Image 1: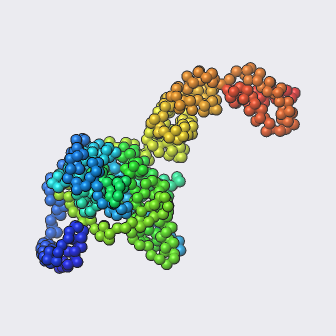
Image 2: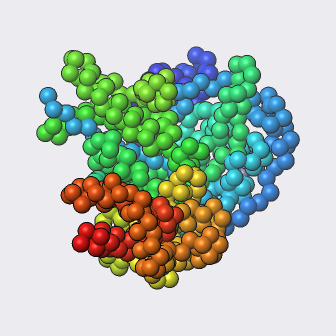
Image 3: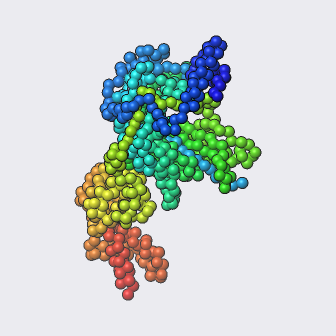
Length: 100
Length: 479
Ligand SMILES: [Zn+2]
């Protein structure tokens, strides 16, 4: 049986960069637990004769040709940025080694 | 205790498609900052990426050249993480069903070959670029590189030394250049290498704890970083310490690796199938079309040219390092030059001139036909080797044909016996002391006399003829 703890919720919230208050954490412990319980229920089905579904779409091979299309004017690209200098998006200093 | 190193490599290659992998923006990221961007590669909500078919074709070509199995059915996945160079907070990549799997590449180790297993090669997108030149406590982000097609190639842990890693990168780069899928410029980041390194006592099956080295900007940097890590691991273990599994950056200035600060959860990417992109199905017919379009690959060309032109393994290796050099060589031989002499002139004089001028063979002003003509002039005795060296330097400078240079500068070799004999007699008369020494058995003086005669002819005498005539003249005078 899957059991979701408060630590699990905090870990997942951390990965998603979400700040949750105590009430939301408790609600999510319950809701995520319910979701996993439902998964466990699905796992009871015998699927040995069912092809695994790897993707939600039935369609395959939708491509574009390698053709360059016009890009956005820079002013438009930067328009919604909280901070920019007319050329770059400005963000808090990125330290070497913080990269994933 | 004796240790052996176990190294696996991950190489990211920027594929040279004209447009990005999921949108129509130009893939030229040297343009002004944030000029080749659109809602898709800026990671705006609600946009739909569409895969560039050129990326699929080129990735399959690389996979086939690396002897991989091409997946009949593969899909794209989201790799989730937060970083300012990835505006949508996930990178589109391939997780459990990569396009290419289970291949190998042969590397050259001082004439011995070794096979390095290729685990996989998969499609992904490049990230934006940060600049740290922005004043204050800020960085600037340029999204021109965001969404540029990237192929990640991962090896099995088959590499046993820094030297093997270097040989692997050399072979891989050569293959990619033959396939014309990337410019492979490591300084500009179009080819990026990371190494997973561990050591274990010789004979032990189980791997040691590994570290991952990133941020290396050259092949020699990779070599040094791996050597450094291997030595660091062994020293740690021998002194009773333990290797900590971590990511380390290569500090080229100090010649050391340093730990990178990473959050513990940084590698929990929570991959899931990318719902905005449909699966890729490469059927047998498509795979076959790409297989038939592959050029002659380095190993095949090396062995064919070795046999066809009677080249040594070493010569064949050097000449086929780049396709351009190999093409140039074959053109020189095609217009009639002797195969061995063509190899010597190409790898010797011409290569030296190219290196000194920092030029590529494709920019060279000496045409293959002119190099063949130069070799022909030596063969026919019209000029000697010494003169040919001066002539090729002139050809390299001016792009003139060797025949024209010979004519202009009156460089023809003196093959007139009478003319050389006259000069010999004069030189012998001017150097009675040396002639006396030669007669009393000092054979070395012969070389001095040859030099004097050659100088008097301004280097134009046919050397073999000069030798014969000088010897004859000396023995005649003796009698
Ligand atoms: Zn775009």
